Image (cartoon, rainbow, N blue to C red; front, side):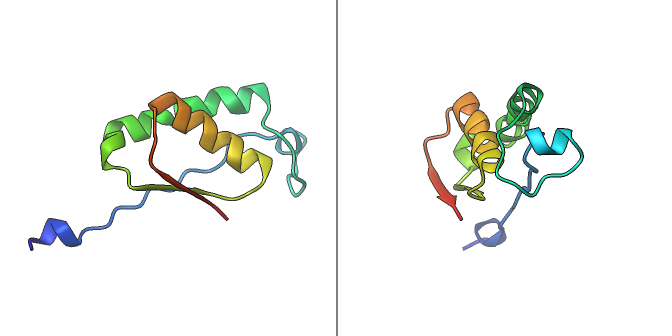
Length: 86
């Protein structure tokens, strides 16, 4: 076993703009704005840069804005791997 086999790399991405975020707060379970959906697809560049085959797991919270951001990214890059919503 070499040192690379023991390496764990994690990437953290924030959900994109939700309806409440646009109004200056964001504690309720609201959907992404159209701008938030567009920006979420821009985050796909990060996944493409590391290579979707190098991604073992995607995790997200369960609020609409979390799941919608994750869905925009995974559909855009064609991710078919494991997903955990918690």
